[in-house]
Image (cartoon, rainbow, N blue to C red):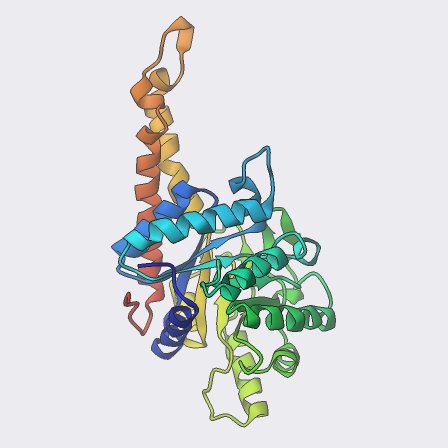
Length: 344
């Protein structure tokens, strides 16, 4: 199917909210990892989200070019062509973008989508993330208001972060402290600034102990009840029925999370969960295995010629794609929760 239109993306998000499941959002940095993500979603018969971080976009442009917009655009255009061959809906998203990179990443990409929409086409990306966690909440929400207006005009969904995800990703590092838990008042300030969809749809990355990076199960101290508290306090403020979920929530830093914690978070309104560390490892493991098993073939040792069949990148990237695809499919199964991720 073609990359999701704004209408299809809206339907995807609504379906997840109603069915109490979440879509895996898979980070990619190349055409090969993008292929693996597409394959994984197709094998799981699941719609899904593919996303590009600032560092991933820069890498995708080439280590000589190192331009985020160029890399993100190239991956998105590639996805628009290749995804049409798969029987699932795929939405394209950009991951964490801090304040100092807005003018060099998200804003130019929104402009590209606006130009496409003005021509009667669909936007290049379906959503973008603004990460204002490093600045005070007032400024964070002020910038979010500006970006939400731009995004809505370009038929794009905005994602923002209120609270801090700990650990390190793409060179952005945060301490592990009390800021990992979004306060009830922060939820109220968010809805006061951005509304509940009338100004444009947005996803909220509220934090409940999330940490980026590699952790064994049980080492990440998540408190999913923080999400429920946020939904409840805003529901009460808006006069909504008990148990309402006014926010579309996002789960960052899920590596090492316990299955029951993931399912609990989904039950409180999480409809998107980012997956990066696990799929990076899944992609890399077969490559390491290939190199160790074919050491004499991939290297020209002692003047020998090596074995072209083993140092041809296709000989190990095929297995890497298969391994990462299997991990993506597994993520789909985990996040089905009470609902059913059905393509189409």
